Image 1 (cartoon, rainbow, N blue to C red):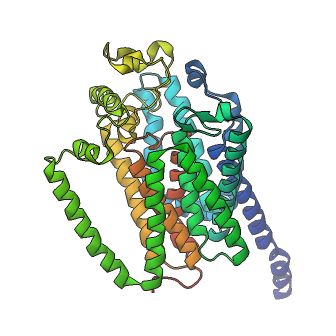
Image 2 (cartoon, rainbow, N blue to C red; image 1 turned 180 degrees about the vertical axis):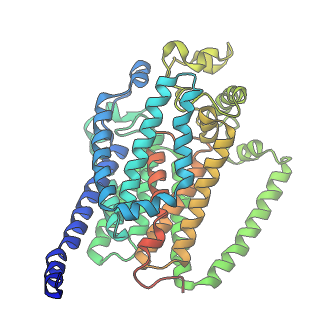
Length: 447
């Protein structure tokens, strides 16, 4: 081939790269919005399925998930080089999901485990595709905040339109099954919105303030105390990142000293109660039973210890049909035995819940993996490269992962397929694994 022919061929092929990049951005955005709507709205808003329906699953859910998975495969193919690098950075996550699928071999209900572990794989794959297709953190942050604000607005409008369905005796639940789920959505929206405001122009700030006020109001009416407290913690974490960005390393060191003092005070407080965490916490919140959870935790722990190493199989403990509901074995006379079968379908403790599914060793591994990703994200937010807007988004994801771990002390969402906080946490971990790539452009680092 002559040099003239080679030059001609080069110019003919040159436009292909921008075209592929444009298609990748559009496909990733479409996939991301679809994933957010599936996660935060779902296919059956305002509906609470029966025990039999939850055991059988939903045809519509499967159609939507497989459709998104098909689009995800296209995104992964268009960004296949990035996908390979990202895959190598997530060996731990692959191991967790793979272990859940492998649990079909010892599951108490193999068919349920197969279906539910495959769902976890599909949802993880969709999040993986969004992470590898991402090219601009700020654009992704904007899409996330705008979509979440729209979801909050939908919840408010539904509550106004059909209060009988959207308001429970203990708080507003909006389009969800219970008020605590609504609280989680508001919590995530507040943290995402607080960080999005960094770098926003005046007009966009007005939108952000309106969305934040709307979200805060919705959170208050849910009466979800856990989400309210964790939202306060999340916004405080965002404020810390912003202050660290402004004042630098000296501020971080001063905060570390204050943190050490608070830790010492907490240890003294625990010492006063013989290091009984439950009793010490109950003295602060005034509820020694944690709204009745303590008896449920004791029941779940007793069953978990019977299969301590491998568990009952992923998705093979709750929602396994009326005749096999675990609470049938509850001690006569306890409130658990009096509850209608199928009403309780989680241990209300994420670590106990995952232990029941896949055993204690894997639960410890999964917890450490999430904590490591949260710490890595925090480090990249404070010391990594990239614009302030990009790094503060990474900080938001890291903060939400830490909140996720705390939230699982009273609710169960740790690697639970289809749970809102679980879906979002897996997405966050995968996106944080690309922090080095996405922060490669722009000035960076903590001043």
